[in-house]
Length: 122
Image (cartoon, rainbow, N blue to C red):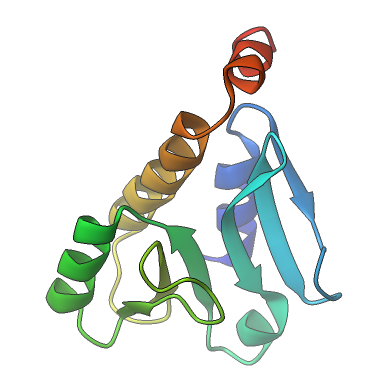
């Protein structure tokens, strides 16, 4: 997956915004103001693309075991709830999209009732 594909896929989701809250190279995708995906643009420029995605704790561990070296505990993130995926490794785009969907859905599930109602009405 190329950075443009990642951006297009994330931005196609309902109520998603893109921001640079940390620095000019860390692109963050949020749903209703909550992060579900982030990536360092500098890594893509160096040919070492990676993205951080939210993940339920049990699945996070299973993915790290199954994709050893490709999926690790979230870099600069809570490793219990976030994974870093090195997308330059042998990685099917379909699999990556599934994990992006999982991250988005986890964040949506934790929104307040009012936020969920706002999201539904968009």
